[in-house]
Amino acid sequence: MKNALVVGRGYAGSFHGQALKKLGFKVRFYDTIRQKSDFSSFEDALKTNPEVITFSDTPKSRIEYLSEFKDRISAQVFLEKPPCRLQDLHLYQDLLRRLEIIPIHNYLFMDFTKQISLPLRIFILRRRPHQSWYPSFDLTGGGICCDHAYHWLYVADSLGINIEALRMIKDTKPIDKTVIIWSNDGLFNFFATWNWPERKTIINNREVELRTGDNMVESYKRLYTADEDCYERLRQQSLKIIKFLGGGANEQ
Image (cartoon, rainbow, N blue to C red):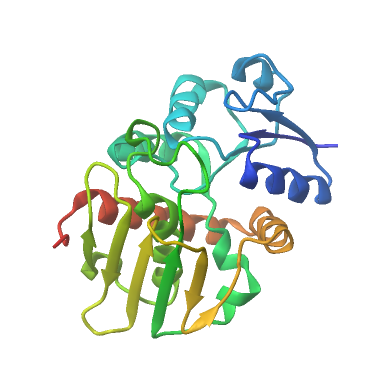
């Protein structure tokens, strides 16, 4: 049986574990935030020689682990969004050259998002971040852009939207709690906020819930079994998105 290590045992991490188990992996967890670890340290976790390592912890910690142990990791490495803090772009690029890294763009593997087309109008309405560490600029490098906008930017890219040409307005720095992103041709319009009295996701005038357990587990299973050509597209998407979110060249 192959070994898998999931770093981070929160909402996404638990579904990663379920997906990997369904694919026949022996799954172990390492989590310093919730203290739900099968190991005393990340170094000890590596001693099991996992074939797959999935990071669903903070963007800061995963880049620190990968940078420190890059010469000891031979596994496929899957990184939840955002794959790194925006200020860690150069570190991330170096790690892409050294390791087999795959950004987790799991919305592309959901039935709903595989069926949508342009024009695309998205409203993400939330009362607060779903993880307590998301408002920490030190841990994430950004706010709701790194949480929700990231997902829909890779969906837009897959539909043919030119990420580099998009326009953006954010409310506050360093942590953005509301953001608007749009294309001048009207084919992509995105609004997201952590300041709404109720929780809703509206895609093209239809209220949906994508982050159900079944949707998450099935999308992860499809991601884990995709081919290298697909993984390379995800890597290139991640670089475009991080450069756009971090560069501010098109920010109003």
